[in-house]
Image 1 (cartoon, rainbow, N blue to C red):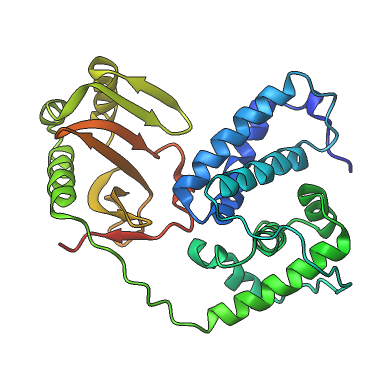
Image 2 (image 1 turned 180 degrees about the horizontal axis):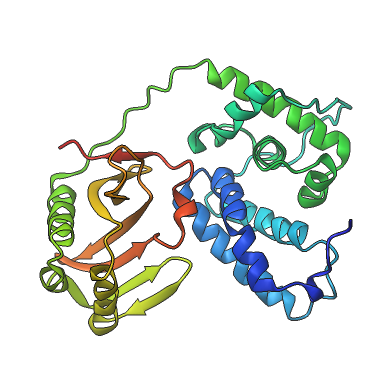
Length: 296
């Protein structure tokens, strides 16, 4: 059955359904769950702008993935990390279906490892082996010929097999004393539900992004955010790192052996809390991210 044209689709429902999948692609393309969310937000803005003047779109999902793909490439260009987009030789190779074991291994590959692949190989492997797109869909999203996609898949999979045999011995940097002190104070007050103490830590012009939900600015607006947390009890904060950045990991107290559900990022200015980025309503962002509980 052909997909419904975008003109007949509830765009908000479509975006809500596809957002985790789109983020998974963006994060693996740019090598960061956090940057992947930035790329995704940029892509969704572009999609909504293009929608105003677009003719009925026959394949909305493919259309959105193509925008996300191009936005990720733009991000890589700005970061000066883009590699050759086209292979010098487009050999005709069979894109064999992988067995279940190898499929699971590729899906679990770290973001850092995906970044070691050239862009074309990275994109084709993520689309087909991680997200389950067909060869035809991959060609459409990347705007590449079938032989080029098959060649990229073949080389990308071979590279990942080689990488899998290498030890992952990259040391994780620890938190600085200043970051640890600030985060521990915030976490301690938060877990004790002493939100008045936290309000005393924030700057007058503090900005908050509740990712995938809302943005607030200023002490008065952001104070309501803490009030909302005071009404629920499905959280326990722990000082740590996400992708090497100082962060707060949020666990479910009812799952003592569970993994972090989501995280928060804080930025400081003159010892006052300047920005808060809370991923509670975008829990998909933690998928594949390297999270470390601080042991200091």
